[in-house]
Length: 112
Image (cartoon, rainbow, N blue to C red; front, side, top):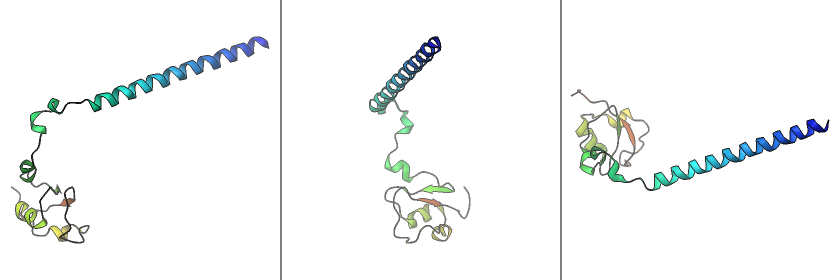
């Protein structure tokens, strides 16, 4: 019986050592990922990934449209040839309350 007790104790210690090693590995990996994300240089991004305000405002109208800075429903309607933006987007309760990041559905009169 004493032999089994030592064997169990050895297994428990072995399991604890494995769990400790796995915890340290995960902590090291997390720290490395945090450091990489903190020191990531924006110059490493491709040149086409640097958008300016004018590029965002001149983007084509897709069926799903994200409102950009300075846009109104009127300018979006003119740009996308969709006179029924308010009617096709029941989540817009106040047409004057449009903000950057608002997602709207566009149904242009004609596709280009």
